[in-house]
Length: 367
Image 1 (tube, rainbow, N blue to C red):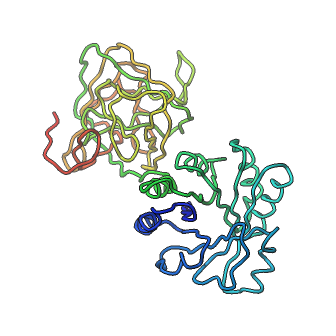
Image 2: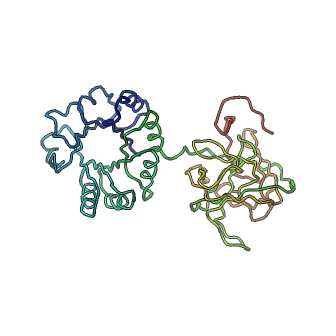
Image 3: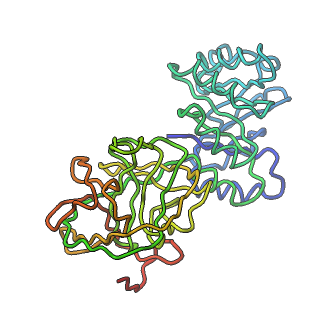
């Protein structure tokens, strides 16, 4: 789990509101320069003291963790011996090769490493993450805003263990916590039984090209209705007449829904470069991927109707061509034009209706 730390040293008059938001959002740590700011925090949040540029106070008060600048405060290991009831961490500002090595060493040996990178490149952070990969301590990297926090959490795929951010306004803490949680909930896929296939004539279909490689048992969920979708496989499997394109899903007609960010549905027609869609594998495991481009072209279309074990239904309209495929139980790759009543495909049957893509409990009839 990624850590969200909130720096309240420079938030000014909004301090009380931001502290309350941080507690409500259940961030893992609140960092202050004054022990008094930590006194009334609940036990659900780690109390972090960092008197940057100041001498260490005589008492650390309620602090659970004290971050120190060794040049001013002394070495964390020595301070830990003198204060066994408090955890100590090291602050490192990375400005050159020497301080980069200091950060790597801190990541290897210190309980906590709070890192500030002066330059915008993330390559030094990659180096520190790699150097500390087998260590037991935690790297907490300072971010200027939520957008940078999202990047830091994903650097080198592993990401920093945590992010420390000073919120610019109320709401930033909640966004930071969402970025730390990063992933999206896994989905419960079910076996659907095909009940009918119908050639429905010409129309526009969308190929969704992403900026990532899909796995062989992975694709995106697509359906004509928001409460019934079928798992369309990516072009990771060989075809006789064209090369594989493992970043692509030949997804379906442009009116179709797919699952995007924050459990919201999107029409295939509204996806564009930079959009986010949810990749799903046959076990329902999910990850958010970035759309690089959407290709919309006129093609013959095929309608597939299917029903779930509880009688709920799904419909998928996709390109009427043998090389367009969906996934079945166990990751079986099924050519859509060969599907027939009785065949089994994997799908998703959410229970919520949708309003502008968001799940909502209201009456909505789709047919």
